Length: 332
Ligand code: NDP
Image (tube, rainbow, N blue to C red; front, side):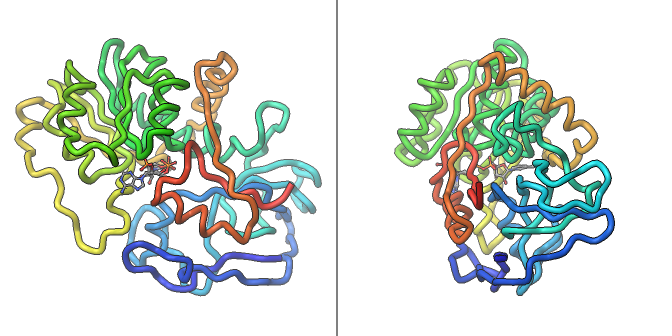
């Protein structure tokens, strides 16, 4: 069976050299453990941080060791009461075709409710991030203007739709016309900006947010966030979820310096971490599943076929190749 190992720590933009495909013996489950065959593996922007040897909310990966990933797979062998061969589960496992894990660390996925891949996207970590990040931190109110960056991504696309359900006007930023069309034509965003084709982001925000910005859900940081800042309204909320525009930077980037805006606007800027909501996943998943059923929440997945292509799927996140959640299909 095969695993992807971290071959070296990239500096700046990672390349394929940072990854090594290694063939190993298939692991054997011990007492309380199960053997899982990966069907889908997730690749996520935060993994860039784990390639760095720096303290953060997610532990760094070791060079020469397998990398970790959220996975959906099938139980092949079980030494755990409560799971049996054939069950579909999800958990934080490895970039691997097979892995063992203790049964307590896995969540069962019901294939009758939704395609199992959604357990890594809209009904998984990104969906839960969007749910609590927007509702708990962003606190949108009817009539508010909500701006979300990386709006066509896994988290952003859910944020925008939840904001509409909350009665807000929603504007997204994204990196292609195809993404902009998906947001406005299919998901019902009030407006979307292709930031790669826009010279003056400030003017584009001015035009699409004539009443200013009440909630900014920040997935990217960098120039987009700089352009949002001066347009925040009185009592605006900024939910800082991600800073992908800066993940490959080698120097500490300069942040918005005009903090006086926060005084003038009595605005709140708050970081959020999905891990803090561990005990409340059930509540978020139930509501997200309900919105999918009612047709209020749509989702898309970008599937790269083949375990050997997992690094390309990961690197593609930094090029904006994905619409919706980026996945790797490892087996049927
Ligand atoms: P996405 O599905 O949104 O994929 C990443 C997207 O980021 C790309 O598709 C690309 O879209 C955009 N992007 C890449 N580089 C840049 C750049 N330089 N400037 C602007 N946009 C860029 O990923 P996720 O939905 O999984 O994650 C979104 C963000 O949320 C990430 O920053 C991630 O780290 C963060 N996150 C944080 C969590 C938390 O608990 N705080 C949990 C989960 C995610 P485009 O074409 O629009 O450029």
